[in-house]
Length: 590
Image 1 (cartoon, rainbow, N blue to C red):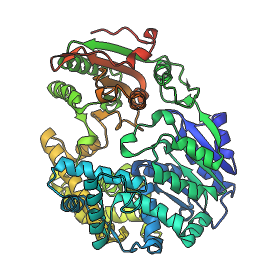
Image 2 (image 1 turned 180 degrees about the vertical axis):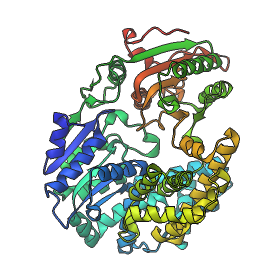
Image 3 (image 1 turned 45 degrees about the horizontal axis):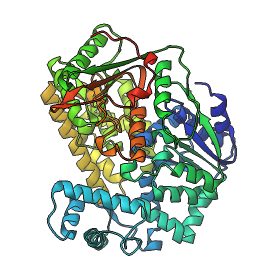
Image 4 (image 1 turned 135 degrees about the vertical axis):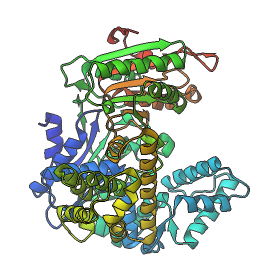
């Protein structure tokens, strides 16, 4: 893939700070990878100094490592790729004692965290109230608010709970995930030694998805970037949809001003056909506070955009599934995983799932899984996949990729990823003829000595227990999926990877994904935008951005559907549909 003039400018800039406003499908990850390889190949980051690349999800970090590896990048001892949380963990385990944090701390288990919150609250709490309180405390930490540090205005019960909760954590030498970011920023602010060491080593800073950053993340990047040779901070204010997690959209402008950064727009959309790009531009153009940017489709194909209102959600779901059946029978999709159903409300998705079940169309909703995507589940699935065909070089390569993407070769003492993968295969061969079936998943991973590997790379027993518990949840899901759908191990793994099944997700869950055919279901004006947001323009604006993100997941076709009545109430189509010129829509047969 060649570079556009704007991408090339970003890649070859040798110093200074750049804010890259990257629209949907603009090749931002490709640009970041080219930038990293350019910096090292031109010795702009000279040995022995390094580069820091921060992402918001483990999946994004893994993809970055994978793409670097495919480019032949080899200087892994001079680059740190990971999330804000993992970088905060790294900082605090190195120099946490400088701010009173024991460097042998453990991350609190969710169950223990829930117990601490219940014990801290002056009264009884339901499970939902515990979850809400946990989220509130996390948002406070994202703002840098701690007991006796900016908490004077808090509700008295919340203040008491927060104080006692922090005392529990300290007494048992725990930190929670909110602490990893907030305390690492405090460390960089208060410890001259830690700040000098890390700002001296990391000569270049790269951050992705900065529109999702919270207050402490802004402070961290400012501290690290201001003394660096340069930085590339990638963002898109049009895709800022995580306000409920404490994300501050205005951080994009703040970091630009603080670093006096140059602004570059990546406006070429390589993903979607023209009508989808034009429709999305029409919708987001109604937002007054956005940074203006020209987004144009690279595709010469027009694509298809459909809009249809139905009497009720059941009729809507039946027709959506009928359209899916036609796409399948007409072979307009190579794999069911190229079809997505995106809804704002889980309740509305259930109508479609019910009809897909009747039509025997397989579907997959990752948000309903009980385990988290992480390196141990990625590698675990790769090992199970290999066990289905121990002679497959493709499956062996997936194990190699999982080892490298998780940074395990380096963490295991600079071992070669291929050697580790071959050792795993030899262990599985030695345990033959064990049948690769879902019921044997635990035994297969045990034979691969996966648990010992996890203990080797974890910095504490608590961390190892957390990963093993997540792995157990994954195995439970594999067993349940296989039993309920009558699948073998290979097909179950493919299903978890998103192959062979229609993908079902929320607007938030769709971020970073793309599909040939997208069904945006339940587009009524009290669902998207949600009725609670109708009187607040800033909240309406975020709902508009959710619509924009969902629409821009489509490559070839997007179906916008709504119901005229449900729950015995008349409904109107989403106002965001009216933002799209009528001539953009194609006629649709029913």
